[in-house]
Amino acid sequence: MERSNQTVTDFILVGFTKAPVVQLVLFVVFLSVYSLTLVANSTLIILISNDSRLHTPMYFFIGNLSILDLCLTSVYTPKILVTCISEDKSISFAGCVCQFFFSAALGYSECYLLATMAYDRYVAIAKPLLYSQAMSKKLCAFLVTSSFLSGFINSSIITKRTFALNFCSGNVIDDFFCDLFPLVKLACGRKDGYQTVLYIILVSNVIAPSVLILASYLFIIATILRIRSTQGRLKAFSTCS
View 1 (cartoon, rainbow, N blue to C red):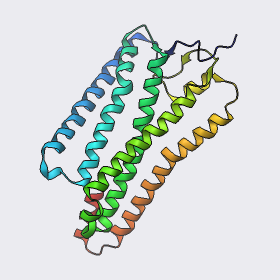
View 2 (cartoon, rainbow, N blue to C red; view 1 turned 90 degrees about the vertical axis):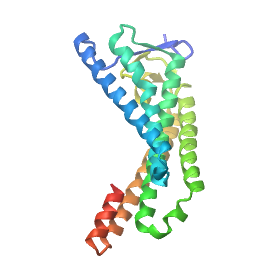
View 3 (cartoon, helix red, strand yellow; view 1 turned 60 degrees about the vertical axis):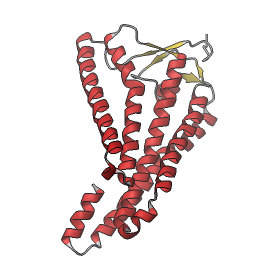
View 4 (tube, rainbow, N blue to C red; view 1 turned 30 degrees about the vertical axis):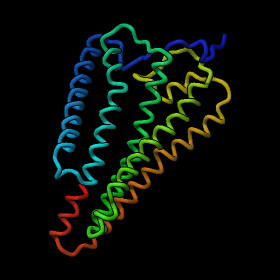
C-alpha cells in the first residue's frame, strides 16, 4: 500500500555506520570539530564587534559569514551527535522540515554572501581610491540583508515543494540529516514540476553565485597582473587572500 506524506510521522536517519565503536569515534570527532567551530566563530564575532579597527566592510562580511557558519553547523550537528550515541535514529516529520528549511536557507545565504565578499575584494583591489565610497555602510548592510532574504525565500519555496511530495517508499533516509536528494528518493508520483523548481533553485542559489565568485576573482587576478611594482602585487595578493 502506498504511503503519502500525510501518514509519515517521522523519519529514520541511517547515519554513517551501525558499528558501535565507529559511532563512538565519530561522536568524539564531531563533538571536537563542533566545539572548535563554536569557539572559533564566536571569538571572531566578538573580536569584530568590539574592535573598532575591524569595523570595515571586509570584516563586516566575515562577521556575518561566521554567524552563518555558527548557525548552519548548529542546525544538524547536535542531531548527528545524538544519532551517534543513541539507538533511536528517528527524527519527527516537523523536525525534519525545520532541519531541511534552515540548512537550505543558511546554505543558500552563504552562497550569496560569498559572492558579495568576492565583489568586495574586487572593488578593494581594482578601485582602492573609491573603495570607501563604493562599499558604503548602507550598501554593505543591503548586500548582507539581501543575501539572507534570498536564501530564506528560496529555502521556503524548495521546502514547501519537497514536503508536498508523497513519501511512499518508506521513511528511512539514507543520510545523517534531512537532505534534499535522500528525501526525493523516498517520493513517488510525477516530479516534473518539482524537478523544474529544483533546477531553478540550483541555478539561482549555487551556479549563479559560483559564476559571480569566479568572475570576481578572475578580474582580481587580471588587475593584480597589471600592477607593475612587486610590492604592490604582494599587497594586492595579501588583500585578496
